Image (cartoon, rainbow, N blue to C red; front, side, top):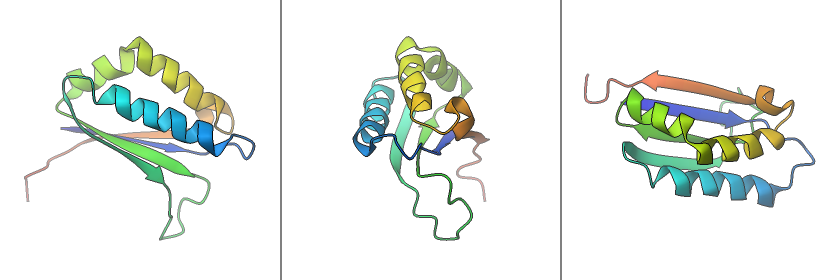
Length: 107
């Protein structure tokens, strides 16, 4: 399983409704694809005070790297990703992505 984690540093002037719309559209889109196990998104509550610049994020679990690649290359993802970048500080520089190869089920 691949866990795709995306964290966004939204511009102060980007409307929260647009932020929510893009994240919701990404969730709706991801759930239509084969190989997507789950999609969660929400605000960063930063309980450990280690990521104050990042306002929100999402996590998608993919069955395998092939499913992640299909998602990443899909034109809908690319269009929504461009919208997301437009809302972030420095565009794509305002987004951090982690892709984790999960060993779920292994102690």
